[in-house]
Image (cartoon, rainbow, N blue to C red):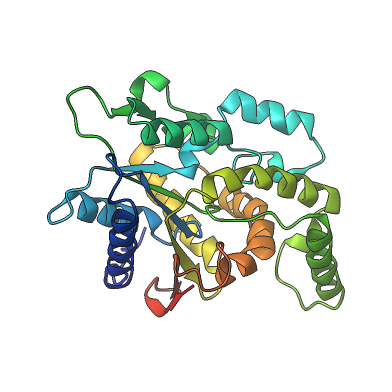
Length: 306
């Protein structure tokens, strides 16, 4: 995978520090500061992992010295057997034949992790191995999960939840149908390079209904960072690079053709939910969201506060 240029820290670090100070000021009279929750969204391969590591290390270091946990939405994927059961129960829905779309995550697990962190209890941070089962992936044995908030250790004060669909909000059947019909109309005149039009409406609605459950996570964010691609089509090349790197490290993973089909399964969600994300998941002018627009080289082209 090509190097991810970190030209983003100068934008999102000051933003997060500002939101953190406001969070601390708002809760100054409380004996225990509430957990500070950060959401980070970016298309696959955009370099979220690198940015999250930088952010977490910054918060953990002086002058902030804030014990920080990182949770990826990818680590909330269903175990392999549960994913197989979901696929078999909806055999005509291509969107749930592999991990990725809303409905293939264990949202209850994510809620449980955040609740446990808020309570200051010893908490296991889930892990998922994408290389298992020829790239289909599987959850790592719970005994191998990192445990935070252990007795005698520092209490986690901040958590970053990162992932490709973090912050997505369900649209409802009517808006899903409207976007789907618009995509179908474009595809009919050969003016379309997306994937939304090639899915059944009922399959898209199934995923949208599942996405409603994710609001319980999104509504807990004190700040949101959106790494937005100038062209979402960049995700294909970026994800190919990412999988090649995974194969070289793990010795197993998807082929290039499997990766393309894999991204095809994600792409309808980008078409449905990116517009809302770009206008602000908390509503207009909340001040809680930062949108960084990046080019194919992953460098920042613009930064917008929402």
